[in-house]
Image 1 (cartoon, rainbow, N blue to C red):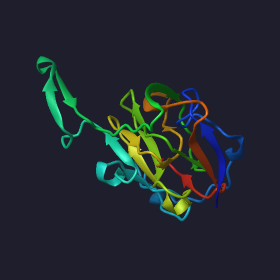
Image 2: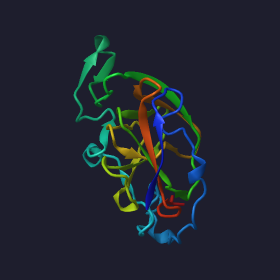
Image 3: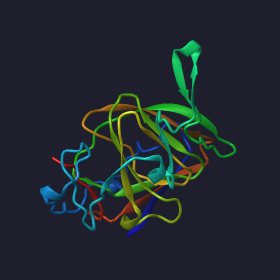
Amino acid sequence: MVRVLRRRQSACSNHGGTHQNPLVQGAGPVPEVNNAERQGIDGREPMTTTPNTLTIEALTAEAFRPFGDVIEASDAAHHFTINQGFAERYHDLAQVDTAEGGHTVVSLFKALPRRFPLAITVMERHLLGSQAFVALAPVPFLVVVAPPGDAPGPQGIRCFLAGPGQGVNYARGTWHHPLIALDAPGDFLVIDRAGPACEVDCEEVALAHGALWLVRGR
């Protein structure tokens, strides 16, 4: 079950996953997880696949294509040498999308690590533009997404591990969970859209409490 929490107006100061709504704090009981069936995001153990526990997948351009772009210095990307041989440019890695009337902004998010098990209780989407996240340190983070369209249910949500050196660009309308940093506070470069304050850009929906969980390996 999902319900619309709010539709936020376009603004530089409060969008892209920093908003916390009191309607979605807390969660239902944590599901029982067999340690032998876990899949850790650090490769130490596998994670269970149960009706209400997300499997963490490797982040690849092909797997993530329905949701946007993977930003990384991959051999598959168009790249060439510049600056008299002292740099390699990996060119045009993501499609930055800003609807008419807005403009592209570059911001920094200072993210705090999440506690696990993590209840997935809210998803959001940006109606007027794309949104990119790139960690400024070589650290992993989690990306929880669902395809554009109707508000997602638990069965339509997927989770990817962005490894060190990887970032993501959510296509316009892609449902996503707010930023999930791991282990320690981290800084993230964010590229998205800003526009007039009267515009409605970000839409949030709530999932039923305890409907979906992320569980880390130990």
